[in-house]
Length: 192
Image (cartoon, rainbow, N blue to C red):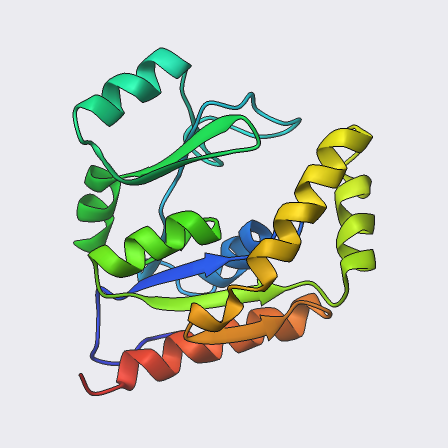
């Protein structure tokens, strides 16, 4: 699939934990090979089963993350669920030379990026909080306390959905993918 004349767009996709944002973005990016790329986020959390360093996240120690932070290497960084997350400026600069980018970040980080650079932002909502809880439980990685934290944060994030350019409900994965692909195509032809 080929995009229009507008290149080097920066898309932000946010969703509550378990909302499907990373899976959606990975599927969308694969539809635009060589034109759209996902920026890999740095984190201090341990890899989940099946996650690969440099593909899913850059897994850093607290010390490495702190050093990068002190050196102002992050466009944005935040602490969520007792772990640090951040987007390296160099990742954005390097990938932007190749095409358009997707940042998969939480609401706090998204607001920081929206204030810093020109972006197109998409908020992905779960169909219901009950469904979100089911998805989080399906990961089988969080205890009850962690699950309750994630659901509380999800409620707070849902209240901020209005700051995004686009909002969609991820109740059918294939439709959500097509909606995001349509946004990319439309934006690539938008006059600025």
